[in-house]
Length: 444
Image 1 (cartoon, rainbow, N blue to C red):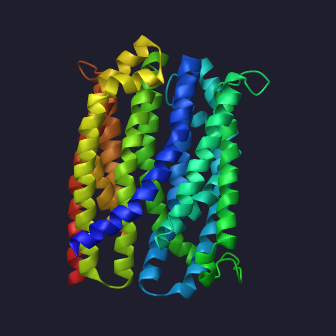
Image 2 (cartoon, rainbow, N blue to C red; image 1 turned 60 degrees about the vertical axis):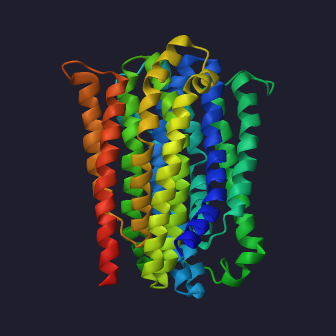
Image 3 (cartoon, rainbow, N blue to C red; image 1 turned 90 degrees about the vertical axis):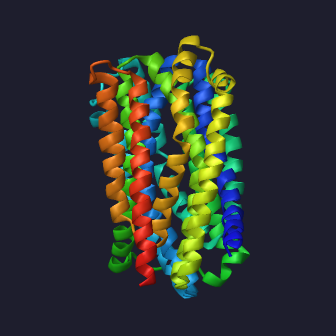
């Protein structure tokens, strides 16, 4: 049965991984285009992109409460309740879009946390303003994404992600470089392209919900419900800790970029490249974690506790081994990868000095990611959120701030990455303990 659960997780995770890598291709495209366009524009997308990802993942994490909700309904055979759950999640996405747009249009409090070069700050503001236009569409799509994952319908996610990433590559290149016939827009062009493909993704998702034959039995958009207090409250109780966990994890890197910004555009550009590589590597354990969440949710809904435990073991083993191999590969090919991002020797030197940290912490990142998502499959989200606050903000961010800027021998950007590694180690231990307690509790 262990082998069977492993095959199910791999089969579920593979299209998710490809879809996520395609989505990550958007960030890679932006970084590569701007790395060859100008250092200030690359630094602007590092700072602005970090803010955008923090806001987006916090809000998307809340609407992704639909994933464990639908997974358990599916496992329990309560298909007639699936449509109502999705409709309430879509209402929730609409409600969350307003604060999302506002935060992107008014990033001043975040910029005030660090001394940023005025030219970089102005470009980052332009970038965020363009991204704000696509925020509502992106939140609707993230709801659709979590819903499809919960039902095991991953193929449309793959098709949409690959298609829109290819479109973004062409559109962003045209806008950044001026090939569209007007002036070269630099970082603003990347923002415009991101917003456009966000709306296209939403339209594709709506088309799938309306016309997909596999979803017809659920009657997803029939008997449309207005917002209902109890279902929305249930989604919020589950989703707010999930969203805050996402925010803590991502914002620790966002704030890291803001603090590193005071070390100069060269250092923050090098950090951006390494952070980009780290995010790409993270897609492997994240795909396996999403698949594990779904398998655990299905088993929990059916009250098949032994199957849930085997799914967790399979997810941890797969993610740990594969992430270790990926970290080794990253270490071996670091130089040519970084050279593909930028021609600036100084930026290359900064990035090469940091890439070893990313290669080293892959295993610990994989363990904590699988454990956190498995707990979500059981609908346990509050305690994992607290662990993330302590480890990512307390150890990773505050510890990194001290090591990088205020230690007797300041380590610079490397201090943040060392502290982040230590935070991941502690998070993997604490979340592993919580997961063991959850597995034992359901047996009693």
